Image 1: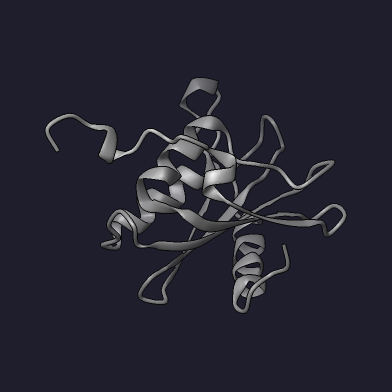
Image 2 (image 1 turned 90 degrees about the horizontal axis):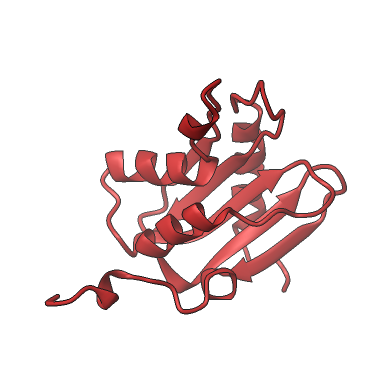
Length: 140
């Protein structure tokens, strides 16, 4: 899939955010940028902790920042995730689940690797088929 208009700017925002990541233990910095339906771009970075289980991924930090800014489920139109690895890197399972709460199955997620410039646009549904969503909750 090719990048759509505006996705290069979203990758640039995630790339810039990545510089601010706090990753002294793994040295695996991640930057994320979310495009909301009102045009705002919200960023997030991973924040590690010496008690490794308390580390929070960039994707979840970006979603938390978006919610703090008033975003609701379904408001995220596109996501860019920037890493430096051997290939464009997918979000972890926990982040995929959190993204499923605020994105649509068709939401584009652009994976970008600064090491080689590789970019892989995918959809949330391709990353998390048969996602558990609020529609699965009983009595809803």
